[in-house]
Image 1 (tube, rainbow, N blue to C red):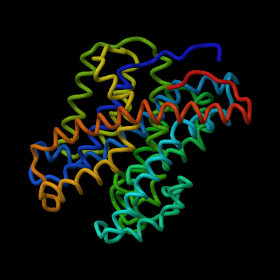
Image 2: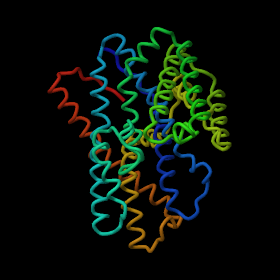
Image 3: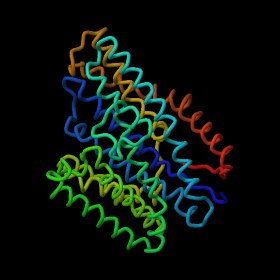
Image 4: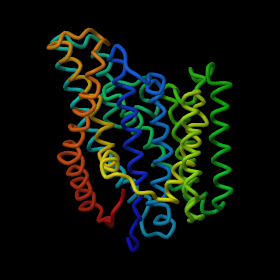
Length: 358
């Protein structure tokens, strides 16, 4: 690839922030009393923020390259598989092993039902209608959903290039709001949920497609503008998003996520190195925290006498530090080497061009 993609450290950092939010959302149920529960209870919204961010970042990295034929749709898809699937496979096998051991020794009573979902998880098809509920490595459902967006990616890239940034952004806003309204009005009867952000697994395409497209269009609009804006707009966006979470106006929060990414992209502010590092290891953090939780809390019950969902809240910071440490080791020892190995294998088989990507 002829041109080098300009990194946006603030967007990498915010990915780490949302990964932490997801981890806290899953860990909070194990503790008897923790502060800021109202915020933590809505941690599932971080997944929606990931979907919008993925559309934004992947457009930044790949859209022009695809349009200018510096890469191909097959190259794009292969690189996304190499980026995501190895760690998914390893974490899936780890959780499956934990379930088998737990079932054998009586720690997990309903392991059989979850283990039936292994093959759909192995194929990364469990968010495509192949499964009706989350199982095994629970967070991986969102990775499966993202593959829907990866499969369709070239289509919105072409449509956005033909319609122009402003019209595309308005179209994405319309699609996002129309989907939200449809689920709100008809979802309870047709889909089993009247909330777009908590749809059953088999309808997750109604969540990923409009949000991913929204992120793509916010990127194209920001890329055309390419002028820094006053930091007050960034502060105002964060303030309104915080209020939206507190008031539980989720549609506003997720929509403004796209605006936040655009503002960060335009201003590209400096971020602390530790904050950026959290974003670098965020995928490992997201994928390994569930098996880590299964082991850690089971050991807490066995060795420390914790009762179910009643772990002392003072242990939460310790668990968070330990989870980040395990994620860091996973990133360097598993995620990066596996990604490079897969790329070399695909390169050897198809001789695709190699270039840096996020």
